[in-house]
Image (cartoon, rainbow, N blue to C red; front, side):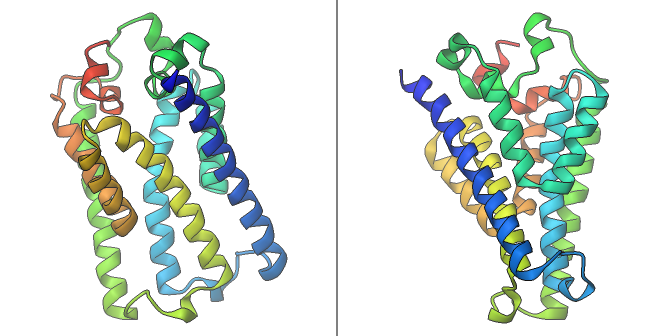
Length: 242
């Protein structure tokens, strides 16, 4: 019963978060116009956008794995890039709706993460080098964000200044942290203890995509180079089922 409540709770959570971001976007456009203006692209806005889109990368990677064809995957990825956390929430909500009552009862997060074809076969997808490539890609992205953060601090000072909180910066931060919420649910599922999950979620909130990349790289190092890369999605208990 508790796990059924978890499935329903996640549906409610992401439905509410999606509605919050939709309302935020609509309100910001109504009071401040469209965001495609040069004066909005301050150094800290640029750094925030880099942070945001690096966090989109693991979400887009999961979507690509989940979708059964490249057209569907590309459509969702484009929507992720264009509409951010609205798409994230919509996609997760749809995946949760697709679960049967038995899947919701057993383990809703595991079944939402898992691709349908993987339920029918245990084939190893991708080449053995995929894990190594992913380690390199997320390491590079993490260092890119770290470099961006240091550079912006050195050239534009602290981000904790009132004049930086323009309507579009606030909207971007809300968008960013809704995606962080989605990633945090995954981390809570992955971690074996609440202390570990809480520690990583605090780092997600404070350091953004630097933590995202560091966490993913650490999880990738828990796999051998011969393992299928999709195993990184699952906790150690669920990996034994695949």
